Length: 445
Image: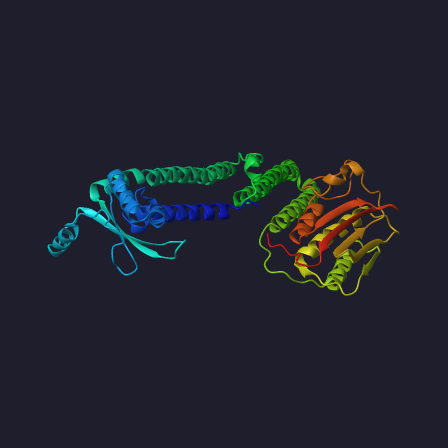
């Protein structure tokens, strides 16, 4: 994966390497002896050529070669043997040594650059010391020409480095600009999920950030839409009992005392229904709050409490429970108990007398399945996906309820990292299952 970190890291190291390399080149170019000896055309090949002429043709030819070399390059040359004595006369003027000594005594700059280099003959093994005296005007003229290519290389390197820096800067600032626009749209609730589709295809940290942002945006949009829908549904559901209460109050105002006695039970019934609806709405809203730390869940105690509640509500109904041994679950017991209680109450509404309701807890492939099955008429397959939506009631349903029980159960399952499964049992009836992972399941958000 192409990493943004490594791109930035490599770019900076490339810049450092270029600057360091060019600094070395320019340092050598600024009058370094080794640089001059290896680059100046008047001295870089003189030693091997002169040695070959001297050893093959003698001192006279070697002296003539140095004189011709001086006329061509204006460089004086003196060659010394291993004993320090001149091999030939060379091209140094007779008074050059005296003038050089005098200038050194007066601490004045000499008008030439003095360089020395030794060379060993591969044929005879003899070593010669070459002394060069290059006039400063000629050396400065050569420097101007020789520094042209390092300066050109430096300019090219700076242009290339500027191009790399520009591309790197754009590769960071443009995606960040798109992310900023997406954040602004999200804050204005106008976020489009495909606004970062191109950026999310990148295979670096910005691509990962865009993909995470897309998931976050989709989740927030879903939550906002669900909250808006819940608000509309709550408003709709509250309107009916409030309208009935107003009608009953209006009738009570015009009724006689004896007629009012008959209206009061109706008012109390509508108040109870309204209170129950508000209680379910609050219970659903509490599931979005922080439940705190997860704790071990005692399923046996929850099952006993559920059966006790069912006996109070429907004493004629029979409940068969099956709890697998050694089930270890961490979560929020109150939340699970409310969810199972809603599922059980829903089963009690539709289960016919004489048939038991089955309450079970089993493990399947590392998942805990808490199931409640009744023997009622079931639900048409087309309506199963909508059953867990708040305030949804299947067509033809006449049992009491507001359509919030399954929504509460589904949200409780999601807070535990699981899901709510709804379906018709193959042998008849309806089955609702909370499928929860056993390890690392608790989610605080």
